[in-house]
Amino acid sequence: MLLTLIYDGGCPFCREFALRSELKAGLAHLRIVDGRTDHKIRQDLNALGLPLRNGAVLIEGDHRWHGSEAIAELCRRMTPSDPLLKLMAKLFCDDKRSALAYPALLAARRLALASRGMSVDPDEQPMG
Image (cartoon, rainbow, N blue to C red; front, side, top):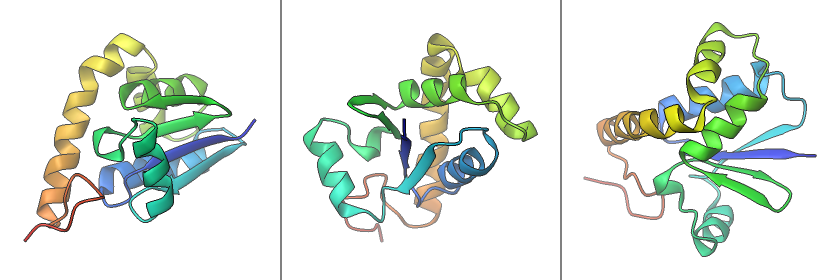
């Protein structure tokens, strides 16, 4: 079954993780979508109560994971060839560890976006 990761392409950390996941995570049916550039998918996610501003979304069929749960689920499924993904998979595969560490990822994302003059919320106008 197709697994879709929707991430914030404006964040360099998110983009790097998503691209590495697509190429080196060992998941044959992983599709990545830059949610910052796809207004329709953001509308759909917002309607489901899964705003991209609060974290990535992972979708498989009718099942959806958001934020730390999305990263934990993706990491559990990985068989990465990339050293950085191996480390990420080990750290974030556990729901509790992922939930504890995820706020640090969101903080890094906020800083990266602010340094680029971008809002954390893709539906808001750019800062500045």
